[in-house]
Amino acid sequence: MAPLVTPPIISHQGWASPEMLAGQAYGKEADVFSFGVVLWELITLKQPWRNEAEGGSVVPLYLIINEVTAGNRLDMPAAEDVAPPLPEVAAVISLARECWDQAPARRPTMADVAGRLRGIIGGIKGRRREAQQRAAAARLGSASSGASTAASAATSSGGLGGGDG
Image (cartoon, rainbow, N blue to C red; front, side, top):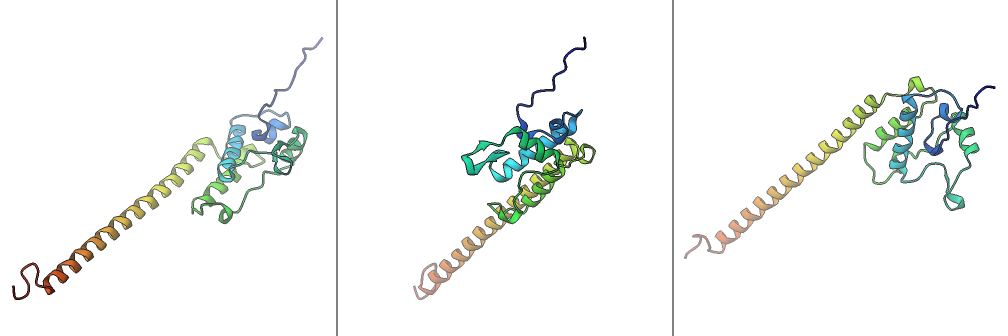
C-alpha cells in the first residue's frame, strides 16, 4: 500500500504564493511573493484578504486560491492615494507588484529586494538631511536678520555708541 501524502497546511493563506496555493513545488521565490504581501500591508495598513464589508472576516481559502492562482492580486492603491504623500511610495508599490509576479522565475531575489529597499531608504534619508539643512539655514538667516535689525534699531535710537550720547 502506498503511503498517504498530505499537502502542506497553509496556515497563512493570505500571504501564500500561487504555486503554494496550487499545490505545486515552491522555493525561495514563494517567500518573495509573501514579502510583496507584507509590503502591501505596509502601504495599506490592512490585513490581506479580509472582507471589510463583513467586519474584517477572512475571505474563504477557496476564494483566495481561485483569485491568486488566476493571477489576481490584492487591490493596490495608486501612489497618490496613499497618505502621507511620499515620493518613495510609488517605488514600494512597484516593488510589491514585482514580488507578486505570477511566474516565480520573474520575481526579484530577496537580495534585489533588499537592495531596492536600501535605495528607497537612502532617498528618504537624503530628503530628511536636505530638509534639516534648509531648516538650519532658515534659522541662521532669521537669527542674523533679527540681529542686524536689532543693531540697526539700537544705533538709530542712540544705543551702542550711536547718536549724540
